[in-house]
Image (tube, rainbow, N blue to C red):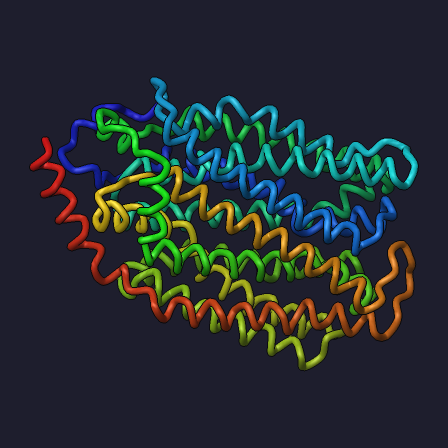
Length: 459
């Protein structure tokens, strides 16, 4: 565990050791191993391996995500009210690592049932895995705001975490289909593959628990609990939280739609399903390199907002490049590299923005509720991710996609192209517009000074 002597510092804007930074990123790697499966493979697995109709799946998944979104609020409240020797976020990671991994394995362990029985099993296990993901993701993301108040350190943690998550996505998208094939294809191939991912994720969550220390919680543990009504009122008076939550919803719609339809694109437009691995390598490696080498100095010089805006603009260019030739492997790979650069720059901000809105909210209203801020945002993200999957399911059905058939109509192919190119491009433009109104980076140093003076007077 990290040396507790750091907690004695007057200022909580501490710099963390690399041991702790890497440990905090482990949960991002483990979580994204499983999250990528939910966003990139589960719809294809259900439609083309199990044979469930796309429109029914899209509707079910949206409903489940909305239901699950309510669990985000509950989980955020539980985190804020938790008081243990480990803090208020870390213990949940310890308690839920194994249940989450097991629920994910159940998702692919579909028994031989009737059509209606299969759909019921799919629905129940999909609800369960989403609830488990919520229960462990809220404390994992909240933990960033509890280990330090340093804006730069939080941005650095976000960059490291995004690198880890991106590598996890790369691993899943590159080796999943070869692993499924090696394990015999069919339901058993998918089950064994993702059982391995689930076990790895459990181990990584325990790494995060044992390698981190909550300092901000320790410094504020004597403060009175914030009533829910007061916390919610403060939440919706926090204009930057509203902006960033909207940004993240759009970003997750963007990632969710493009991720869910990518395998359909390589299968039916490019006529090579396993090319999704090459696309993943072409996009994820530049993304990791940009995050590892470029983003930290860029954020330090230009601020998170400007870096993320530039990344969104680059993503638009990447989608436009695809239009040169949608069936050319070279064109698609070049486009994927461009998208990877843009995605890496987008990762420079993302959840680090939310940590900063915690300080802004406390400065503006005098109320500090990390759990509620992160859980309410997670509610929006879940709805956004669910809507993304629903959009793909509904879109495929609208354009005449037929589950389990090797040949699709021209209209269905055009629908896949629209979902893979034009819709994500529109979302990237929306991200730029939202960030135009975000100016918290400019006033953050003054906010931190004001809060420190205010807290010293209380003491």
